[in-house]
Image (cartoon, rainbow, N blue to C red; front, top):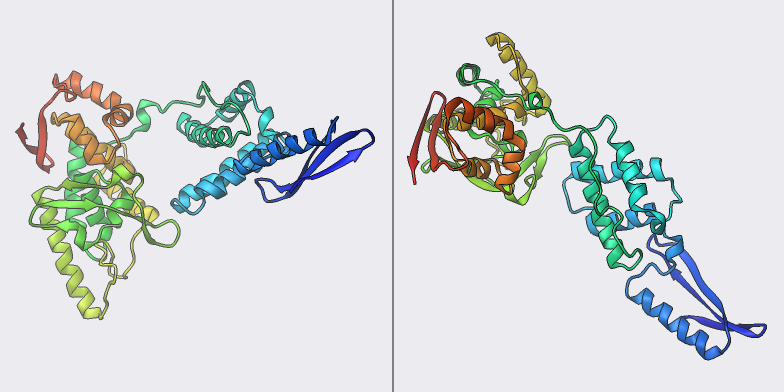
Length: 388
């Protein structure tokens, strides 16, 4: 409620309120010739508060609003790795702009200078992610009538583009050797073998693979339902897939079905002997009832590549790229590949694998962007497909 008072020959109002950060502040204005004019101005100010404005726009800092926006719209709604990114972005904003930089004072030029500075020595994808978060925050500030335009509009992204050799993948011969070796070594004590073969033949992310339960495997129809993933970074638990489009059902080849049947039999026999019951029914829980994480799988993968004499070894994520390379080399439709990878649209797939697409077309003469070839069964060295 506003208080109206007279000072000398003029009238003024005073309103106490909580700002977006929860701190008590005061909005006041004087110099009105009549009490009625001060009352009308006070009512307008109170209406502005009810509409969600931060009231005293001159005192709302960039960091105050960023924290408010994160708390209101983001916190507790995403995976932990994403939640950790919020505080990282806050730190970068604080380091560059300082604690007291007013939100209304941030201009497009200042924001571009920040991006230019931030992009030094960083990948363009990292710059893009930060810019997208702040752009959404600024959109919210516009809607809250704190600023009148989004200062990130038209920002030029800086940072280095990924070079072609950063997307590392195995050629068909090495991929075939690795698949055969992992197939041979796979056991309850060497769960990495099962995981690596699954990665080669599905192109799925590691978190998606180790998050599979037996209910997700349809042996009869030779499909895998990827509907969740596993957080092996923060102690091990189910979490959402990377994006909504990452939820997908994919075909798997007969040899993977046979391998998973073998694993299921071994797992059931061992669990019975040990008197162990897995309430989560995870496919890739090993003999010690542990789900192997990124570090463990990559360590075993590196040993296998060294053993096989693979000159240009890759990490597990490189198996995803190798899967794409193999499908492209066999003339598989890029739209099918995009859905198989769980990308939101074909543009994303083309953006990531454009150089693979170009090199494949030069080598084979096949334009997979217009191909009507769809995989129904995949195994290294051969692709059975049908033409729609």
